[in-house]
Length: 131
Figure (cartoon, rainbow, N blue to C red):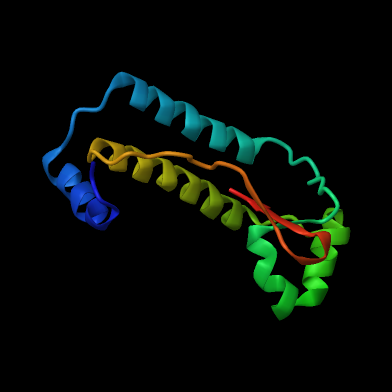
């Protein structure tokens, strides 16, 4: 089994020397990338939050900007739409993540629990959720 400490060198080796990819890996990549593009182009549905759930990305907002956190928590529907350039950055990042996972697999690393949802209880009945 490969070690995480060699991941960068192993991916660089794949990029330099090439690697044979199984058709199933390529299909999975294509479906994932297409799904992410479709998600970004589909009309957004308002986020419905369960009481007491905080997203992992919001942890820093609680202390650094409590007002922003309050609005995100109680009135996410009031948020301004992201500009197209930001939407493009998120889409690009999602697809780059898929490429990196394919390269890690091609380099002989085991990739597990991709985007697995987790939840961690914290104080006062709140739970941090993320993936």
